[in-house]
Length: 290
Image 1 (cartoon, rainbow, N blue to C red):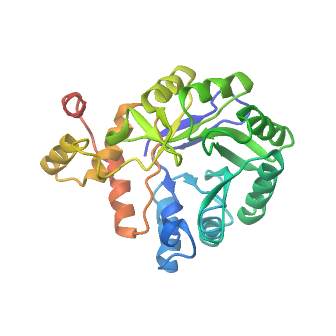
Image 2 (cartoon, rainbow, N blue to C red; image 1 turned 60 degrees about the vertical axis):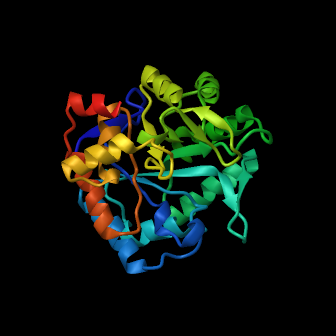
């Protein structure tokens, strides 16, 4: 499996597999509670790492705190080359709703919780997830993240759910190692956050490429967008692939800085997704997909 390097010019660059694994789907319904099949969830994590995946995406509000505990149970003590990326900026209520948790004190609490549950002394990469307009200013949130980095609790800081203006503002404050946004074949032009706000997806990718910042796409295959994936479905059928596999392959060919993290709660689907790393798309295929 090919690799890319996060923060290559920093004192502690992280070289990871081009295809990662997102743990969110290992939880119960609505990203809440324990997995329906715990043994399979643990086997998925083990199989991903044994197959060459060295980048795992998690958050302490997945579950609540379910995916972090699964990672520890399946993989601790961790392989030396494994990078565990987490997110902060949100939390969950008992009704499983998502709410901001992004004051400096909140962010410190989240980082401390991740360190405890993941059994780490330092979180290698943390995405600050923005939860929509209003509330705590970006400068205050990101400033708190950089403070935690100076304290040694965070190695690298990233941003999640940002538009080009927010990313540009973040870059003026300090080094942004990665960006995690909704992005995929069916939603390249825009993305919508939980509040319905539209942000430029392609513009963010262009800014990432300009600064050499990997973009980690989540929810990269969105179903139900009218005609958005017609060509994807056609080519997938011609090649004997699933649409999910072709979407992953498209991402890997679209830009060398894209780091897909397709998630699944099925071991069979995990193996299908991993196989997508070996799919070759020609220039004609990419031109056809557009």
